[in-house]
Image (cartoon, rainbow, N blue to C red; front, side, top):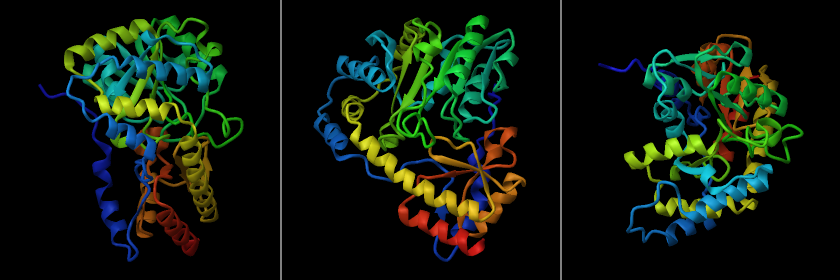
Length: 367
């Protein structure tokens, strides 16, 4: 019996990509948030030094890696954890897709996620036959909700949830007996005060979850802050009970982060300089691209953090996609992320300076 999976949205973008590729100066692909800048040399060296990896790696992560994750949450977020409350993952997407299955969620249960959302939350519900509900209002979350996802900073719209909003979501999840997970992969990439100099709030903050993080998880990835998308380097932290359940399944299925990647993660987590340097690169690209879009008649909504601009001209998203494709610029329609994005496009900052400059010039010539 085939699974009733949501359609993979990126296949629909192929005609626009072909049109954009026909531009005389080539395509400017701003549709996918895949890093283009080099992985820091210190991290690459750590990976290389660990390539004598003849033994099976620990699914739970090495003690040194778990300690590095614990220390990172303390240093960057002021959260106190133990090594039984953290777990490395093979990126973050596999964990997001698999968690509902591992928790025994199924038909008759509900999984909730943001109204404008990364499609993998809905996929995780579909894999187990659960009801998927897109809702930003915890008061709407029904009895029978077993898993709630919040995403801050948000993909696609770059919105940031404050302490009070996160606290309300956690309180509602606990009232329902649901596990709640904060997907926080862009936390180091805030652009608007007060998050331009500090990470955005984590769901594990004591002001949100209290002193006990029971039923609460934070998911993070080094893909964005450290240009490690190709390493598949992520982790989850929080409720030791839920982490133990996930770990038990992961041991059976052999979901082992490779040993050299684990060593590279330790180096990445301990170095804030490379994160600040990469953020400065993205800030320059963001400033140039935002100004060009606004001069060309776009309005930028939300976008307080993350690697995207959430832009609109008050028209159907696909109309905007096609118009930009005529300029050789490829963007993602907001409808990929739910009906709430029907008049927006998501524009990534993850292209080279030369390609960002090309987009700026084309927008200016067309403005």
